[in-house]
Length: 567
Image 1 (cartoon, rainbow, N blue to C red):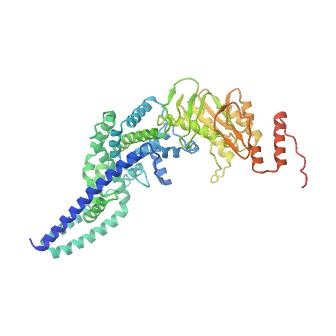
Image 2: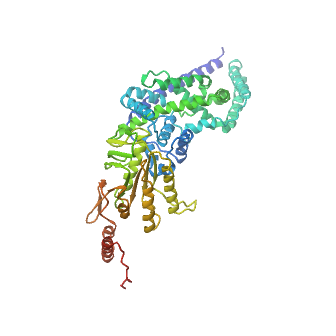
Image 3: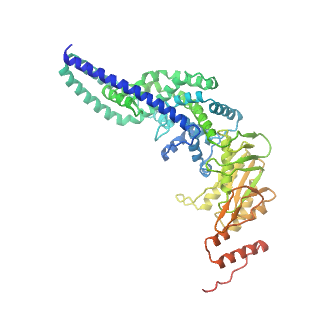
């Protein structure tokens, strides 16, 4: 063997040795960082940021699997700010868990079997740290993918055009031949090696541009399969049912996993290994050879992929809910009433999105009317009732010391606005929103409905007349209606069929203080005129306003005003 050949061999040996050392060190650093991330994230608020496109993509899994199940509609979802609740909950490690958790929040359950199983998993992971961390490390192999959810990526794989891989196999053979030539005829080998390298790199760059999105799609599947391969080795009896299903689906796709090892290691990883593998792929075009080969094996296995996403999603989302429970200062497991008039009894109810919240308790059967001044807490309380009802029937966790209620659908009409694109006024948007609740009430299925400031978009006389009739129509045995209003008149009109509660405030010398405590009965205090005085309105305007209000309360008649005096 001549000197040139020895130098070439030495170069390759040193390169491989350095690469192996760097890979080992990077692997150690990754494992240490992952463990720190898991420990730091447990019981903490997730710090992930989302783009609009990502959130839209995450939502599509739930839309696809919903079938004929009740689905929290967009109006209710937006009214209750449930997207922020999802973000608060989303301590999942994988895209499978992320998609499943979102779907879980939008599809309340009405069967105890599902909810009890979720409770079992949540409590197991909450109380078994060692097993949880082991599973989280495995789930991290799937990871989370930016821009699109794993569901969208996997759906893309069905769009790619299937074709042969003969061209790539031929070029790979020439690449190997060029390396052999380096050892036989070094000078000729260098020319051959450089020539085929240029051809392959150009081919790789040109063809990658067309199918790169599909590479990512296949990489998502492979990540799931590798994670599943690790999961089947776990010995956790409490989740054996899920692990067995994962193993079964994974085994059905083992051919794909074996054929695509290099592709999985070279795509979607931002480290030294990925860099090395990208050079190898560019030279030998292995990713194209494997990609088109794997596609043939993938066809016909879509059902197994869906089942893997579901089973992994169930486990990952249960861990996220367990972490959420650790974050909460107080929570309870809901109790459900099976029969009788729709009712609810909650104690120390608070809102999960509010820092230093004030807890309230209430026990109601039938309609509830909440009155009070602006910013006193009416809307927040009603949102909290609805949010907890949804949490009870999704993640089986309530932010309260006690929650007892029927299983109910949830619909709201609260944070509405004009539809400028559709050319509809606020009032039109509002009456359409309430109409959908009235139509749902006709289904005779238990329903919790929340309406904030009924028909605020129209004049006082018609608002009170129509609001009272709408709320009366919702007063049915299977419906639990809550409504907030500034119209005290409604509290008198509906006093025989709606229980009255209120929030009040304390007027200080230069401020209005709210305690946000729910009190029985209708509101008796008002702060609107006091606020006029507080910020410096003309004393005569304030005095006249106060006298006019007092006179109307006494006589029920508004006295006409005469022309104002010149100043």
